[in-house]
Length: 339
Ligand SMILES: Cc1cc2nc3c(=O)[nH]c(=O)nc-3n(C[C@H](O)[C@H](O)[C@H](O)COP(=O)(O)OP(=O)(O)OC[C@H]3O[C@@H](n4cnc5c(N)ncnc54)[C@H](O)[C@@H]3O)c2cc1C
Ligand code: FES
Image 1 (tube, rainbow, N blue to C red):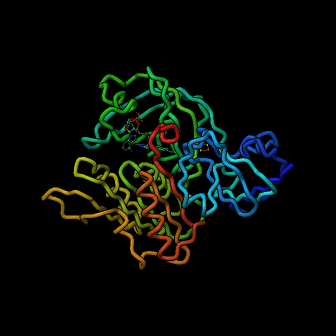
Image 2 (image 1 turned 60 degrees about the vertical axis):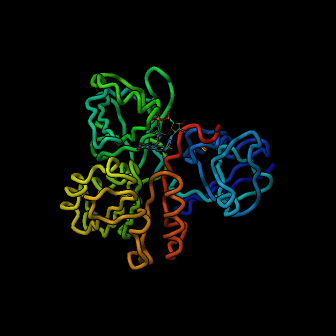
């Protein structure tokens, strides 16, 4: 039977046997090792890892959201890939950083428009709920009425975990988007499951570069609030924020407040299709980061739609940032793997 060796980002190794017809994630679970995961059908990429040696086979029935270049580069989704021989798999997180997820009931306390295409949802968990998250992580919210699950990153300070806040992009006919438009939501309860994901602010004093597209700003705001409230408030941070149109621009006032709290926060904003009043950068968010912004120690955090992540990854890699210093959360549209 193939042996799987997992290598976590702090060097910790875990080895276990994995039948060649059983997904690595499931085999790890049987061996008592919990790994980061969510959909378990190849869709969300929360279980994404890197194949260091050996070979795996992807479940031929799964519609995975990795592209050919990523697979060629060694990316694997542990939920739908099976070891065909002894393999070594690198995981981009520290095992001890995983917070066990649970289901919570969240009462909606506020819904407000941040821009014509963006809403802020504030919620409250029961006082006795013990919820914790790392800044950058997300939860799944069950859309009342439809039962559909949608993922949203916390945009709030993890120091107040029981009052989470989310930035929600309103799509023309999205299930969650339509729910958000209802106008009578305060007091309504929704089920949330989390925390999820391995996109979280890493420890250390290395300079931080954040590149966010649209509501990809949400986890960055959570990270910035955590930094502003902690001992790392003098960290050099570059936040590049990009939106498509004026209607999509939001959060600038909150970012200005954070800039006052974080003396070394460099804030840059780009708009792809501005109107005549826009005086900032016209173009893509990736234009905002240049080679001279990068140091050998820079850690880069990317969040937003998949094409933006791909472009930003390529840009910073071109400036010499190693793959291990790039952390990304792709807002993969729901149902992509089954489309
Ligand atoms: C890990 C993760 C974290 C996320 N965090 C956030 C967050 O903090 N804030 C946030 O706003 N979103 C976030 N998303 C995206 C979010 O989960 C939903 O996919 C999105 O809000 C649409 O939900 P909906 O129910 O309104 O629309 P749906 O009912 O899912 O979609 C309606 C239609 O719009 C299409 N569609 C879906 N998404 C897009 C898109 N991005 N662009 C164009 N068309 C699209 C669908 O294919 C469908 O045809 C995250 C996604 C992931 C995977
Ligand atoms: S848990 Fe593997 S892709 Fe979602």
